[in-house]
Length: 409
Image (cartoon, rainbow, N blue to C red; front, side, top):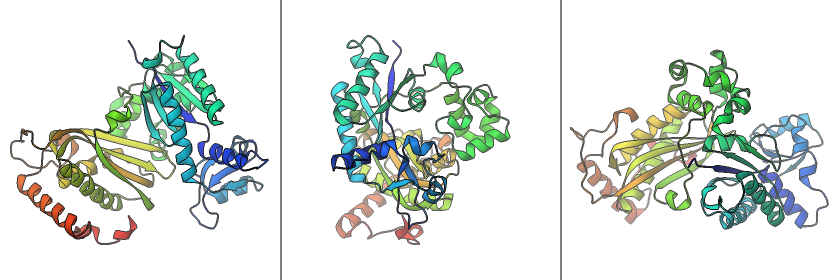
């Protein structure tokens, strides 16, 4: 039986949640009904629009643009600062409510999640009815609205939820992509950032349909593996499934929100190295090795991207994890400044299990070379360093490459 997946996304989450909080404290103005945004400190040059009301959108204000630009478009714009503790609370309330309706959910950000319709399909006459029930429950119990995208593919459910807003349900099944998706500009495709759009435009590809019908070899020659991913998404190809919290707990990872945007591979590599050491150390402490490594990016325009690979032999070595992560980042990154970087390990196996070593037990230079486990000597050295750090502190032993500008990350 084909799977049915919901993507549930809060409409302008930060602004909606701030508006509700203000109303609960006696305000007579609903920020959702006037030109209003959630943004950073106006005194800081890098303050950007984090969320906007529908009336603000009519002025051409866009999420991610500088606040000063938004003010030029609408001088009467109301600006409220973000309250992340409030947003965490509201997010928890939402996920708890959704979990009561269906246990199989995968939260992917503070304001969105996927839901597997299968466990509740006998409770409703159709997915559309179930989605209507969910939207009504969220509004009646929590006071804000959500959009729900429905599809047989996760990526299509995600894009369906971005169709007309607010408080609506949209379907985008595989058989509907030519009718509903292909006419849209390629910039509307999930994971297609500014740099990718420019390259595709130079190739004469302006719509999602153009990309779907393009020669894959031409796309990948210009955009590498990310081009293949975009081509697959344009054709509705996505084999991923809803991963519940229990499944996600089987991995070990770490991520960091950067104090300043990373704009080149040299800066990014230092962050990856630090994260690799952290993930590797946690794997060793847990007595685990990873057969899969993934890299996650959040850009400064708040879009997310991730890429993963399966290893030929499992590892808990920081050098191997770093080399794999570096290769993944090179394939994934479209050049947009990075706000967050993360590494996650998955498909964990016990470090006591026998390992089939590669022929020469040499680390690979790229993802395609199928990296092997680090040498025994390397792992013994890293375990010794773990002991030193445990006794004298995390900074007792630091790589020389991380000493310069260490505080930046």
